[in-house]
Length: 301
Image (cartoon, rainbow, N blue to C red; front, side, top):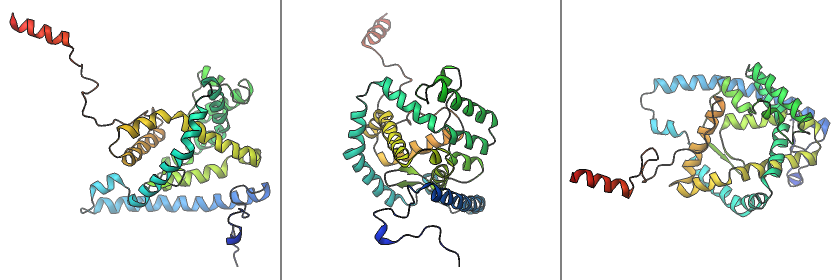
């Protein structure tokens, strides 16, 4: 009889005695080993399903093209989760980000650099899995330089020396391997995603060497620090999107997809998606009163 990897008793759910989130070192190793093999199998099946689905879609002349473009079959549920996330953000995350934004930028940059440096082993691993050996070498050099000369990553010395920081994750790796993104999903607290990126999040957690090095409290501090750092960094952009969007949910969905596609292509990341407006296009020059006077004088001559 095959024993389940994780046995959950209802009376132990609230105390997290399963050890799923913060297990001890030995359980962590066993859990990650089993789950890696499980997700490799899922990944292979997903790739096959993706190819067969593409063939089926191409052969079906009655497919709703608008539906395919949006690819959000769970929109009603997603909107509910999105509203929940917005409420939690307004009550908790944004106030914390506002307080943290009071810290001088120099100090916040040190925290961002240190957190980025802790993520370099994942960037290195995914570059190798994508066959990007040159980028993997650059990432390795960044980690060595910033961990030493940069004082455990507080200072991005590698960036000053011309070695650019480029984040990579297993969601991008799976895309390079041909795995389709799947339908749009909004997770509670975690926000926008899709099956491929959700898989990537789990795999990155499993293969992250820092998970074996850092203690439980250090891992929690890292996770919380990343969340606060990211929320503070994009606070103004999110405010702009919300204030200018007719449908904030649809805007966030499109922004997420554009951002992820840019990351996968290793191209320049978009700051904001273009927001339709009734104002004069930014590329057009607004006529000034002086121009109007000149035109009248010319027509009079």
